[in-house]
Amino acid sequence: MAVAVTTDQTFENDTAKGVTLTDFWATWCGPCRMQSPVVEQLSQEMDNVTFNKMDVDQNPNTAQQFGIMSIPTLLVKKDGEVVDSIVGYHSKEQLQKILDQYL
Image (cartoon, rainbow, N blue to C red; front, side, top):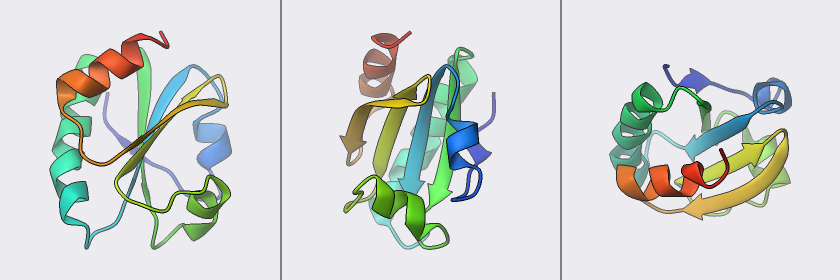
């Protein structure tokens, strides 16, 4: 499964069902550029999780709504409810362990 792009307008709908992970990032953010390939790889291995990316510069409203002050921040939702917020770079194994507890 590929990582989909989500926006302020589509975020609620994109994260309403099942377990979702949204990667809040920006093009100028070095740690974000390190995290992105990890999220991409994990999306290929975990078919039971929906993966999204949101550029905080282009979509500031959702980041503000969820109080995201540092990036990368990975927001995990289950059936539309926030269950976890992960700040900073994390390995594939770390993220998989976190996601597994919500499946």
